Amino acid sequence: MNPSAVFANKPNQKLKIALIGTGIRGIGFWGKTVVDQYSDIVEFVGLCDINPGRLALAKKYMGVSCNTYDHFDTMMKDTRPDLLIVTTVDATHHEFIVKGLEYGADVLTEKPMTTDEVKCQQILDAQRKTGKKVRVGFNYRYGTLFSRIKELLAEKTAGRITSVDFHWYLNTYHGADYFRRWHGYREKSGTLLLHKASHHFDLLNWWIDSDPVEVNAYGKLEHYGKNNPFRGENCRNCSHKAECKFHFDITKDDHLMKLYVENEKYDGYIRDNCLWRTDINIFDKMAVQIKYANDVQVSYSLTTYSPYEGLTIAFNGMKGRIDSWQDLPWRTEEKVSQDERHAREMNQEAEEDSSAYDEIIVSENFGKSELIKVPFARGGHGGGDRRLQDQIFRNPDLPDPLKHAAGLRDGAMAILIGIAARKSIDEGRPVKIDELTDLKPGVERNSVV
Ligand SMILES: NC(=O)c1ccc[n+]([C@@H]2O[C@H](COP(=O)([O-])OP(=O)(O)OC[C@H]3O[C@@H](n4cnc5c(N)ncnc54)[C@H](O)[C@@H]3O)[C@@H](O)[C@H]2O)c1
Image (cartoon, rainbow, N blue to C red; front, side):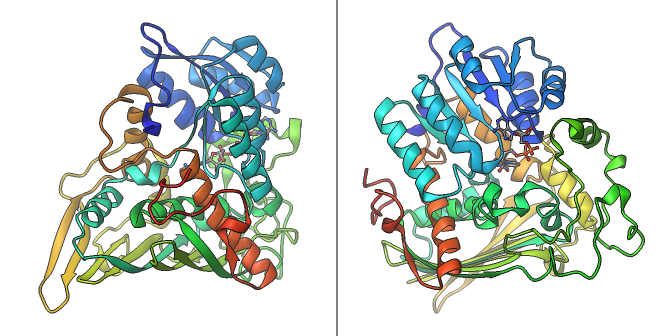
């Protein structure tokens, strides 16, 4: 079944949505944006969070009149939603996905679906038992550049693909930000191999159109965390403001002040925490090799302290090669500062610049190279955020020729690469995907149940 048909509305009835996790992603992208764009076909029936201050703000910010809950089971029993949206801290997703399914709801979860193999198996079991649907919000697939790459691969433009080089650079604003709060602890985020790289592993699975079978990885924390001579309580109260290049003045951001700082008193969640906390225990550089069931091999890396934010990707095929990149300073005339760039990326109000474009070069072995210009969409993850939501809420029954919609198995395969990579680093050995859960890799993606 096409996962995009999962949340098809009942005739003449609005889709009843409950949401757990009223943080920035929950109240923004899956909250206010959904209310603003789709209120003719959906209605929020409940909001839940452990922080009462953020919960109250969520209701106001989203402009909804539904009840709010500090207890998940009470919300589910009271509201009986058609769809549960899960936007809590990554390591807690499984709890709500499993219970949500058991309460009879379909579930839309933010990535990563969960953070370890035991929780992943629990989700797989719950979905099989209940027959309800799980969908993962993999918005990157929907970006214009990534979709065009998928088309070229589907057309076999470079022949059969044999290997892929994929390198992702987070800059000293965006990359650093992950180390300020819960993402810096593997117990909460599963490390950036799950929290961030699961986006990239999903893209690889989708592009390569096969399942991963084995992963070998290296990773280390050598920039952030304990690796600095000084540290402070948090950026607001720090005595090293002048000398710390990473100083982040949260007081300049009204939204973050209201969402986090004003609600610290309830749970001690500090949004502008020190990057140099000694208990940060995730990697800040990661290198991962992946072997796929169709024999494609991937070299992937993630760097979190780059001077610029960007990526390079290359597909080596039997007949040629496909190269692409985004935001490499020596390839672009873009004169945007790196902090402004990050703010634009997260902005849902896509400002399309009709003259801007991304580039793909297709080179034939013994032949010519062709430059393909892909119209550029910066806002909301390359315009992907809006297209994802339209497919879920507005047009669930439209054909999905490039198979953008990501279901449970896609969500699982993306995180299983991250889990295998973390295990490989911890245990110093290659890790097979089929040793983690009962999912067996297939030569064709989604061919094995
Ligand atoms: N797809 C994307 O591009 C994208 C972008 C940003 C965030 N995300 C994902 O969205 C999710 C939320 O991220 P965020 O940046 O909004 O985080 P956040 O910290 O702002 O929000 C998390 C919220 O969950 C609440 N929470 C935590 N544990 C809970 C529990 N046990 N029960 C109820 N509430 C609980 C917190 O109080 C907080 O309000 C994460 O899984 C993240 O990976 C995805």
